[in-house]
Length: 209
Image (cartoon, rainbow, N blue to C red; front, top):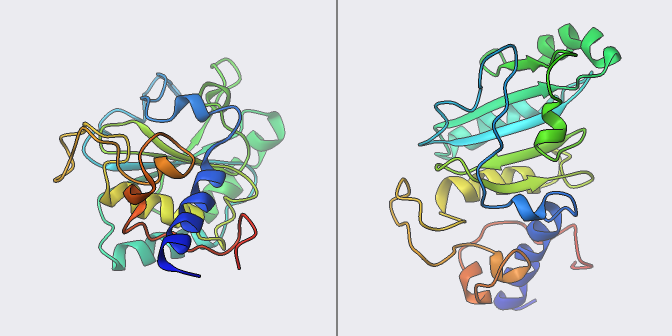
C-alpha cells in the first residue's frame, strides 16, 4: 500500500469510528450543559483535552494502561471521567465500577430525578467522547470501535491532543482557520492532504489489510 492510500485508510478508520448516525451533527460543537448532583463536571475543561467514557457495571481494565501509555508518549494534561448509566441495575453496580476505575479518574453517578446525561450527550454504553482544548466534541467513538484493544480511542485522544481538529482554537500552538485532521476523509470538507501526519493505524476497518 502506498503512503497516500495508507493515510486515506487511517483517516477512513477513525472517521467510521467517530461518525455515528446520532451524533455526527454535534462534532465541533460544545457539549450541552449537564449536571450531576448539582455540579457541572465539564467546568474547567477549557485548556485541556477531556475524555468522557459512558460505562456501566464494568470498567475496561485497559483504561489505566491506555492512560499510562499516552502519558509516556507525552500526551499529558488530559482529563478523564466516567459516567455510569442512570438505570437501577447500573446504579446498584456503581461501587464495582468505581472500584475498578483508576484512582484519579472520577466516576459519576446519575440520579433518577436528573436529566439523563447519556441522552443529552447523544451517547450509549461504552462510548468515548473526546473534547478538544476549547471544549468542543472532536471525536465520538462508538461500539464496536470503542473497545480499547482497538486503536481508535487512543488515536482520537492523541490526535486531539496534537491538532486543532475543529479549527479556530487559540489554545493550540498552531491553531488555524483551516480545519485540521481527517475531516477530508469523511468528517468534513478539507482535502485528503490534510490527513498528513495523522497516526491512526490503518488496520481494522474499510477492508484494508
